[in-house]
Length: 194
Image 1 (spheres, rainbow, N blue to C red):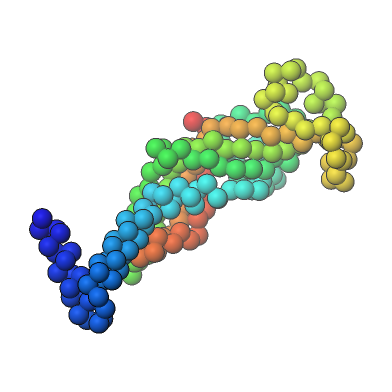
Image 2: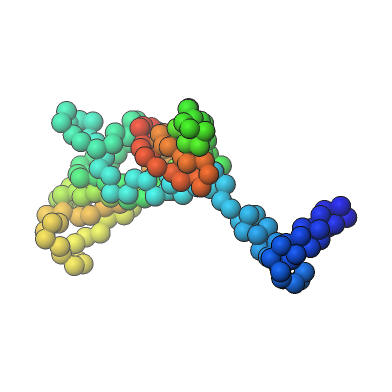
């Protein structure tokens, strides 16, 4: 009852201040309350940022000293697959944590984010190696035989494009503007097996 009276009082004040009808003022206040209720939470914003973070990032090959890209520590990668890149990151909403490391100017936060996610990968395998795999290994890799489909110049007749998924724990650093929850400078600093 008290909340309803406060709403009516606020509508009367708004109507008087703006020279509008009481009913119109009630509608404006209701719209403002609805939009405030629909504001995303920090968790939602970070979940979206992580989901959009690593597409097309190269995966480092731990067997090559000069390999560039992100190293997925302990995450088993299929043998013989080359030029592996991240296709997507699907973070688990219940497995995302974040903490504030430092605050600047009372509005900008330096944060660390940890998320468990299913990570989708793409890569290429020599056609001969693909045909040497047993059926279960081929099923795990979800290969697309370019000889039977459209052949692209990069893949030629010698490769099969493959995709696969792995669970991983990803750790990021970022800065967030507190007022509008704007995530900036998102950087994945580690990727590990779960």
